[in-house]
Length: 191
Image 1 (cartoon, rainbow, N blue to C red):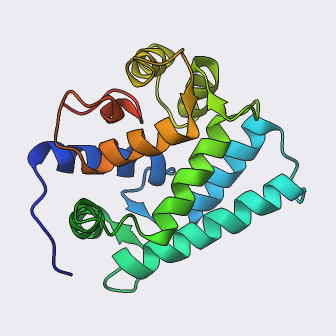
Image 2 (tube, one colour; image 1 turned 45 degrees about the vertical axis):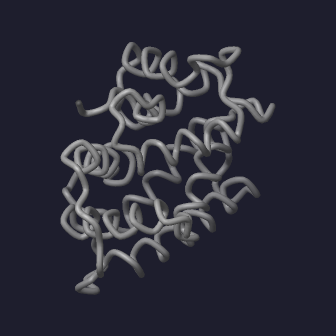
């Protein structure tokens, strides 16, 4: 997989989101079980009953995301994505996004899913309480969540629209600018 060299800061962000958001069972690899655990956590927060429409949709979406991620990043086809495979995949992805190709389909789906999960009220905006509730479920402390949200929402009316979220997502994964608001998308950036 041809790639560009990520900066140290970009690499720290990529590894941070691996550890915080994707490796939910904290065993050092991303595998299907991590997505199953994420489904259960998110559905519990939202009160989506197992077997209900929202639960089934979350399960279907995260299965599609896992299959897409595995297909691109799992180079040795062992059903696990290591940090090394993850960083290599993101090096190629950042190159593609920077050149205008955009994120791979699975990543776009994950971004859309995460906006929906964060928008617990369904008003098409994420507020501080919603953000804090969701990211605390991934093990980030309340104070860190609230501080991160303040950075993310700087210059807004205290709410993040879907368009804002998409821009912040792109900044998080692509930007090497340490002052970019998107660096706070998943808590305090790994400066």
